[in-house]
Length: 194
Figure 1 (cartoon, rainbow, N blue to C red):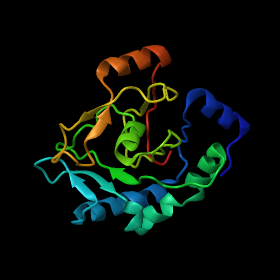
Figure 2 (figure 1 turned 90 degrees about the vertical axis):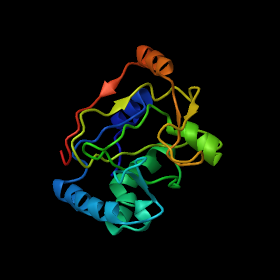
Figure 3 (figure 1 turned 120 degrees about the horizontal axis):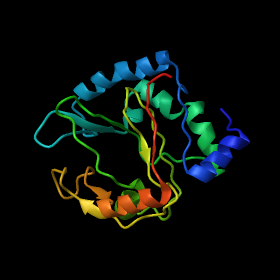
Figure 4 (figure 1 turned 30 degrees about the vertical axis):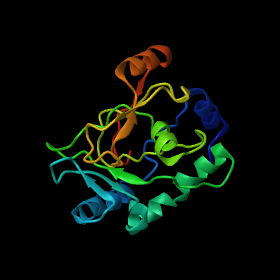
């Protein structure tokens, strides 16, 4: 999949691209059908909500799940990123974030690079997030993607241990408010497979 010049300009302007229907309903169904099997496994890569069996995330699923391994290497995922960054890719993180009914938990407002810089020592913000919505989502938001790295602080409120991967470097509400006032906010209604 190659991006058009218009799409590249939109990315440079807005900081994101949105592709409804990039994967077919059949392709999405294969991934959805795989998730309960992954959630049922007892693996060190699986993280549950504090005091619960409700899955919060499965890290590195592309290493132990054939459908997600194919997704991680799929040309519709990889080629546009290579085109935008102009070099071969290294996958820093791959995960399946769950929002379990009734027992699910929120993901605090955060910027991933804050975590990657402070915890993983990533030297510069040359990283890109790619998300595939497997189920309906009421909004996907982006508050000024060109903001660099706003001041972040460690939030351990949803972590079991001080070094738990789920303790994020989050951005305080006042900073988020200022970013939205400055750059606006975009919310897309996400319907899988469309």
